[in-house]
Length: 68
Image (cartoon, rainbow, N blue to C red; front, side, top):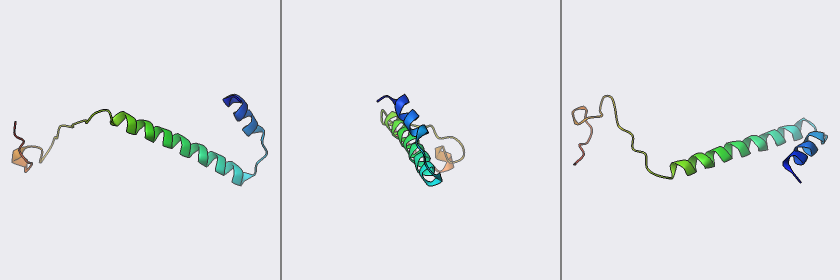
């Protein structure tokens, strides 16, 4: 079956409010889960070092000095 056929079958299915809420909840959880997995995979590629800025970012502000 294709995705279109599955969607058509789901939309034609009789359901009460409880079943509808369950279907919407599962769909939302799937979308959020997929985006979280993709975000995690994209950040695993390498470490991203952010430059510190503002008060406390330099040795004079109380930060640790880094040896070069």
